[in-house]
Image (cartoon, rainbow, N blue to C red; front, side, top):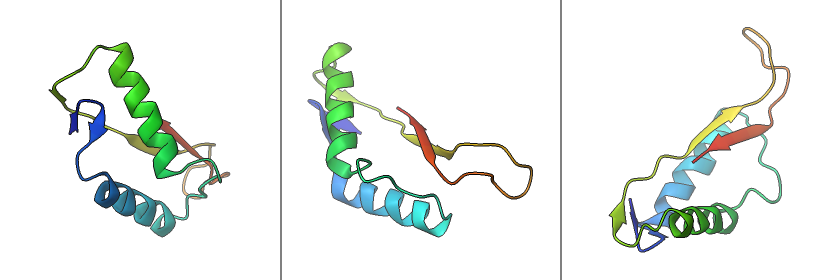
Length: 79
């Protein structure tokens, strides 16, 4: 949930996200921080003129191919 471009309970959401990424052995690049993601969300809200409450879905997934074992552990994401 986002209100006025700010993620509600952002710290808890990002702790859960980064913990899950670690559990799944998805490598987190140095720039992939809570501050980076929050700035992207804020920019997106501004571009879409979202000033009140809004829903947000952040999906993080592993890149690369492979059937059972991934060839890469680099994350990609979609907001």
